[in-house]
Length: 130
Image (cartoon, rainbow, N blue to C red; front, top):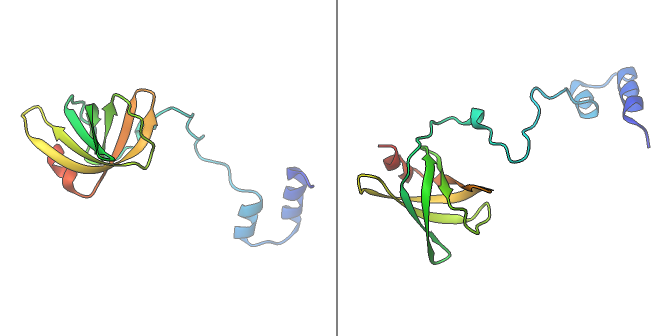
């Protein structure tokens, strides 16, 4: 099997198309990948509000209780961590500090040691930020 340096020498010697050169010797990455477990907060598009609301979830016919760590128009961080896997569908009912209840369809996006990241599905979440 040829090593990477001999493949690159061969790529420079042969007149290949730009796409083929990229396949043989891809350009260097602009930023290093994130370390596992680190949050990439710089990628977030929407602002997060640090609020503490009670959240009831309906999962596979069972009712679970959570508290929010933070909420945005697209998702929320919930605590405590439940025994759920990423991709699990949920129906969440947020109880805001003014007593107003907002029901949102969501999906478990990430499971961390300190809680769950959920991604809101549909446009029902608009009532959370008002």
